[in-house]
Image (cartoon, rainbow, N blue to C red; front, side):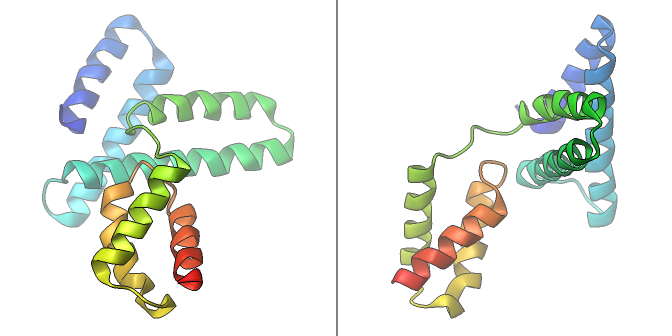
Length: 149
């Protein structure tokens, strides 16, 4: 099912059940997707919508870290609950072995031989792992693999 359709259905069920937190999170996510559609001047693909979900997750993780440092456990709990809802819209995360295999495959497909080719590898790899792996982790893994090549 397309992500936007699933969000609309989940919003209806959250409204019916009176789940305020879920309703709020879905509305914010839907607004973020609509803003990206306005910026793009057209509908988003599912991969682009997943990037919006992933960005929202990253934003929540950063907020959790900040609130933890500030000693605001109430806000940490709220952001953690929101993060769990957002993560339910992401595909299953890639394990380290699966991610390493995708990195090797991308390096082989682009015929990359040095760190100068990292951009080509990342351009091929990121659409495959969006929402399933953190970009900084992927970048680090590509850099290490190319350095050892």
